[in-house]
Image (cartoon, rainbow, N blue to C red; front, side, top):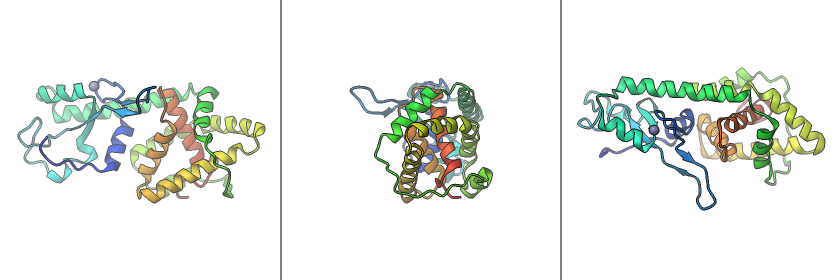
Length: 253
Ligand SMILES: [Zn+2]
């Protein structure tokens, strides 16, 4: 607790993203949606697997100090589970915590995958209304590339394995997103272009700010899932993002 913590913003985003914004032990949501009276809040705590202090819980004087704040040595918990592992360090060894973390991340992926099956036009409508309500009149001309090789594009962007995994999950459902937006475009001629413009504006904004495509991907996903209340809505947001990844000039191609 006394040592200087030096997590990079990217590490924090990867940690929250991979944990699905939930405690890795009890699965409580630690990113709380805005209410009528309060904004979004987060109550999660980032715990060190090898303790940050040699003499504290799970401390290890031989562990390289510059690796303490790396993604690999961190686990996202709610305050009460964090207390639990620190008060009973013999029951929660570093190897046990690594296992808890990786099982939790697998669980998150599975929830998204299973939720994919339940995405309906209701979720897509809500997600897309949220993001296309702004004034994103098409100021761009878009290159259409129907025959883009998505796996090439994924390689070019140098994503981490976790983000690649999210892409794999989201890309499974882009066909449904495509039929939804195609229907919408029949009713409102500029619909698809507005959607593309939204993504392009946001993407370019984020690209100015961040060097790392993982960070841009997670920021974009967070932005469009911000009011999500369930894995189904999170999965719907992911598939919309992946459809745009497939369809247009969002990310390097
Ligand atoms: Zn917990």
